[in-house]
Each structure stands twice: as C-alpha cells, then as structure tokens.
Length: 335
Image (cartoon, rainbow, N blue to C red; front, side):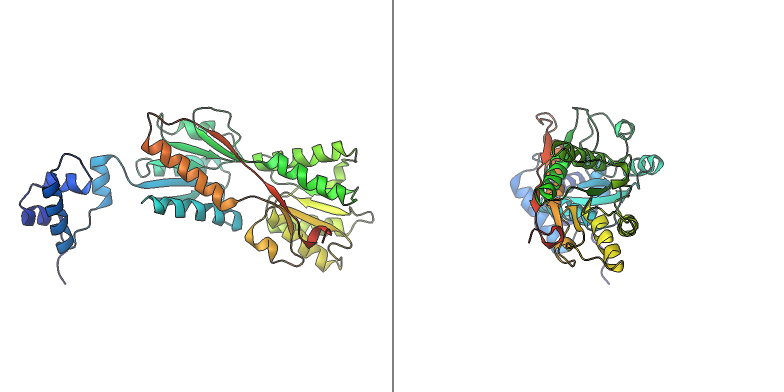
C-alpha cells in the first residue's frame, strides 16, 4: 500500500516551500496563479488531502458549525437537523450536533467541548434562559438562537409564531362548534409550550369560552405524555369535544389512547396538533396540525450563521419569526 502523501511530499514535487503549499490549500491570495495551479496539479497527482485540524491551526477556521438542540429524538429535531445539514453542505461546511436534554450542566459541558472545534453555533435551548450559556462563549462569537426566550439584541434569533399558530387552531375548533376544548401542554419551563398555551387561552377568551383548570393537562412533548393525557380524558364522564396538543407527538399519543378506549376520532372527540411533522399525514385519521416549515427553520438558522461568520464586521443582527399555517385533515372533523 502506497504511503499517504503529506504536505512535504507536495512541496518537494512542486519545488516550493511547505508554507507555499499551505497558502494554496488555504486559498490565500498571496500565491501567484501559475504557482497555485502547479501545486494543485501535484497535490491531485499525489492524492494529497489537507488535514482539516492542521489547517484550522493556521486559519483559525474549522469549516464546521456546532448545533446544540434540547433533544435528538423525534421527527421535529430530525427535520431541523436535515435543514441545517443540507444548507451547511451546500456551503462546504460540516455540522457537529449535540443535545442538552434541558440540563444546564449538559449545556455547559457541550459548549466547552465545542470551543475551538466550530466556527459558529446554532443554539436551541427553549427550556432555559440562555444568558448563562451565551456567557460561556467568546465575545462576538457567531451565534444564532432558535426558539429561545432571549431578549438580547446581540445575536440573530429565529422563533416560530407559536402564539399565532395556537390561537388560529383553537379558533378553527371554535368555528367548528366546539365549546369544551382541552389542551395537552408542553414542559412548564419551555418557551414554545408557554407561547402555545398563551395562544390557546387567548382564543378561548375571545370566544368567551371556559378555561377550566381540568381542561389543561400537563405533557412534555412526548408521545407517552400525550397517551397518558388522552387516557385520562377518555375515562371522564364529561369529556371535552376537542383536544389541542402542543405538538404532534403528543397528539399522536392521544389518538392511540382514544383508539384503545374505543372512541372514534373525530366523531367522539376531535384531535389537533402543532408542528405538522411528516408523520402527521399518515396516522389514522390524518392529523390536523399547525404547519411549521421545520426544515426551513434549520435552513434559515444556518444561512444567518454563515452570514455572521463570513461577514462579521458588516453583519446586521436580525430577529425573525417563522410563520405558521393551518393544515386541516380528518382528525378535527372538518373533512
């Protein structure tokens, strides 16, 4: 087996210094065009591949972006990652992904491990105030916050129109004639969950409908918590006529619980969710949901991060809201 070509082999064959080869590989403008072409031809012939770690020591760039998410489980996060990864690859960047599980210690550990290994960071920590996490990063480090309850104007931030989407979905249920509407919430400290609960309450208030405490059930965005809440509702003598789950995973869990209890959806009880994950259209009955272009959320965050990384001096910080739309399917009884 032939030995792997090194930068010294390329320099010797091309008749230039190691520093010149390094400049060519790092796309420096200080190298004459004919020298650059000569070095590239030799590197191709020898099969030389620059070592990214060594190159980063010279350029202070890793061509890698970091992504910290609350979790990696479920279609929502896989769609976010897909949008990030596809966009990063189009711009010749790699992605380093980790999760925090809403734990401050995990966040601190992950951020420490990423320092020096990434050129910028996409941070999604909706369960916590992010100020302590941001404080761990170097000043002016390229950073995009996604779905974070952070009021700082120093970083790009993208959030989903959670309040508006929840409000619109509950209004839709009211328009269908529902007067007893339950909600399965997300985590108590979760920014998305709080905004969706606020939208739920606003729609009921506008419709002058009751917001009885027993119609708000706690969940944690998992299918299991949705199933548990659905099973509890199914056993009640006075059931709600509709259930709004704060995400699709919990709505799908509730659908399963109602099916096990012998209830027909939507004839006996309507069910709607939030996010419109790909699976939503394939459950039985197909799930009505608040559509979020999840992949585009990841794409937009990546584009903003690349802009901040590539044009640090002229970068204008933006705060953007990802719009939502209603997707009406059979689970709400409108079709």
